[in-house]
Length: 255
Image (cartoon, rainbow, N blue to C red; front, side, top):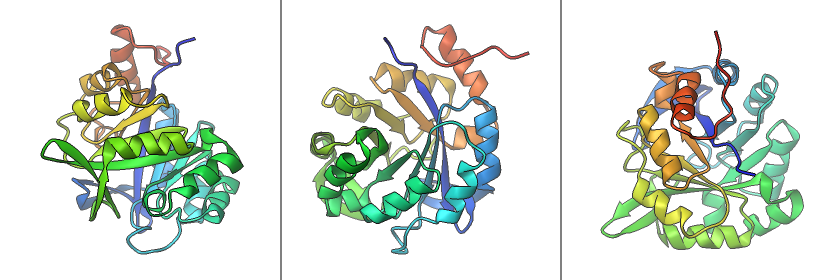
């Protein structure tokens, strides 16, 4: 059975509000996370990703109250990340409405957390986030909202994360983030050709055709923020575009 491709709005959260920037910088306020989550759910989102982007920078755990409020208006999968530094942090999120947790900094600094989470909750609950920036011919990993460079090759890390039990990889191009010029399909093709777990494209989506390009690059899902926050395209419009081009998406024509 061929699984439907997923369209995933992303809510980047800081100081109680959803924000969006370019290249992880110059953040602007977008709106209330609970209201936006409900709107996107009603519009046909397959999943919602909530990222507390200040948690690692501020060395604190994810804001559980915000997670609980958002989960209360959703009946689709809900992935939460930012500040997940321990098993107990992940447990708290999963007990308060998250279906999956995504980890980045903690996974790189303490890779065993991937194994432990997968063993405790199952790989389907564990998403490893990979924020990569192109440097010459390689892609290098960054953490702490793109502010800390790691001596770690993104492709090698993707393979290790899978081997440790990650059920999905969320791959973000820092270079393309917020640019609306499209996903880094070269990066995505490199990752999808190396791993067997689902890959979520992230960073740079600005038009329906960019979703198509991500799926043609082998991704199982595509995450976006600006294209939805701006109201330029609805999720329904994008799914119709994809369906007309033969992509298997969960889409119902609405009057």
